[in-house]
Image: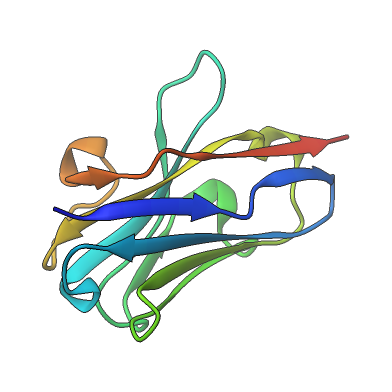
Length: 125
């Protein structure tokens, strides 16, 4: 079992930045691929970014490429999402996800086994 706890959400003006954190516990963090999803009111949960066991393999969804950066610190059992140049359409609850090992598929919620409780990000115009 893996427990995930997100933090770092909040209210920010358009063009601003936030850094989300996801603290993991329960298993060897380095053995798990990690990801971020988000869900806006009335919409399905959508893929944002994923990172494999090392920082060298990452994936980002097209809407956030060039603005968001995913990273992880295996020594601290923590994953991060640095979000720059935030837009009102980035407003959502952001969820941390984890699954064991490496996979070439990562953009579907069914690709992930564990989820955090979510953290709200609100971007005002």
